[in-house]
Image (cartoon, rainbow, N blue to C red; front, top):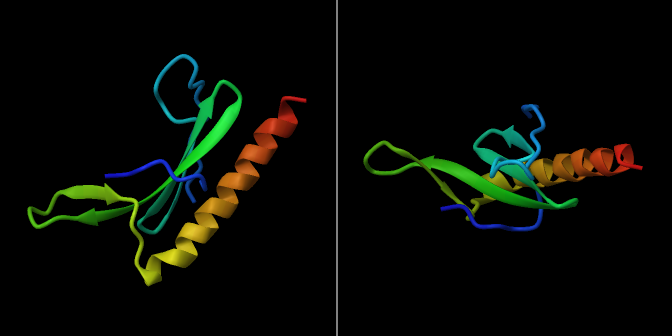
Amino acid sequence: MASRAHFATNIKTERDSTMSNLPAHKIKIGLVTATIWNNDGFYSVDLSRSYKNGDNEWKNTSGFFQADLLNAAKCAERAEIWISRQLSNQR
């Protein structure tokens, strides 16, 4: 289960989260995903890692193994860059 951690590559289409509960953007590297949320102009980021459980079903967790940390850091950096660009476009 993913939790909201304030950090945040596949480029997805930006969506207006004020009109729906969809994320503004997602960044995925390997099994790590940064999900970026727009909360009335304030951005937050969830970091999660995908894994398969014993029933071979895909699940997400907010816990990371050492091997995931570089991808988590890269996702966080790319999320920060994406958010900065969105904020600079609003000016």
